[in-house]
Every structure is written in structure tokens, then in C-alpha cells.
Image (cartoon, rainbow, N blue to C red):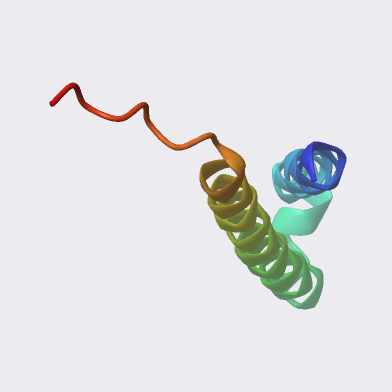
Length: 68
């Protein structure tokens, strides 16, 4: 799971870098395409992170019983 999240984070970083390129600033179609890809990658990242948190919480040991 962590590897998948890291890959998506690398994709997001790459897309941010591409969007800062001066060539992209003058290409509306390419810019729009990259922003869509960025949005998709961010949604995937959010989903993977939420899933990872859920799995982490569901596999943690239960708290110790309180003394009676």
C-alpha cells in the first residue's frame, strides 16, 4: 500500500512540475489534460491513503481491558 501511495505521489509531483513549464502555459488543451490527470491522481492518492488508514486501524490490537 505504501508503495502504491509513493508512486501516486511521484506522479502528482511530476504533473505539478509539467504544469509549471512555460510551454504548457500557452497550450490550453495540454494544460487542461494535465489538470485532469492531476485531479485523477489526487483522487487516487486520497482513496489509497484512506484505505491504508482503514487497514491500519482495523489491524491494530484492541486496547487492553480497563481494570475493574
